[in-house]
Length: 297
Image (cartoon, one colour):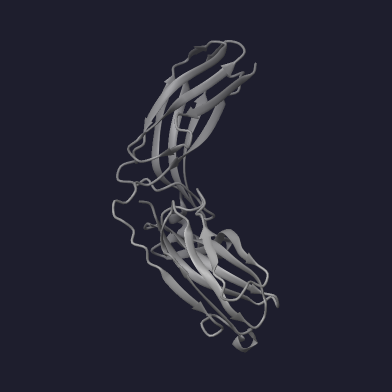
């Protein structure tokens, strides 16, 4: 017998804040009347921490700190054991979105070593001969916006061979002068990162100019921390030998789910940086790094 089970939330964007009510319907569709042993709905919020391969050697020190951190967990019975008629049946539900005890609901974030996820799972129990049905649905939690205004902190930069860090053979680098500015490094997550860049002169033609958004995830405890930086997105803002002293706009939208307000807790941290990467036609690559602080207002 064909039976489909689904969870539909009332909000199309699936975005909720702490203290609000997550509401929707459990949707059942079957060609014939369906006998069941109860329908339950479970809401769960978890922080999953994972260690990178380079941290495996110190795994034992981190063992307790990398266990999943529960943020919210509640269960309701949607329907008692009985029979569902043929056709489509909608069963409404409501869940208050409140953290467990003194926990804080962190914002939804999909990272590599840190993952903050909220989900609903519906279980329909059936007789021994029929397989139980289960369906999951992720919803998104945004942290409560800050009341205070964020004052932009513009950053001017000048990049030359002499300003670069971690250079092994500075003499081998082509001569160049690149200037520019970022409009702010304390950024609103809902607004793009903006600024300008100018190649004033370059001994070797430029091949490409790119913006690289990086997440820096830290997992650990008092015994030590594992800190890993991974790329989220890379946007090319110029290709080929750009005109000298011509302003190139810097514009990057922060992607949903892969970024969140900068977060620091006792067990983990999520921070962000942006790299300006210039590649020359002789394949020399230079990078300038800027730490960012993301917030929601």
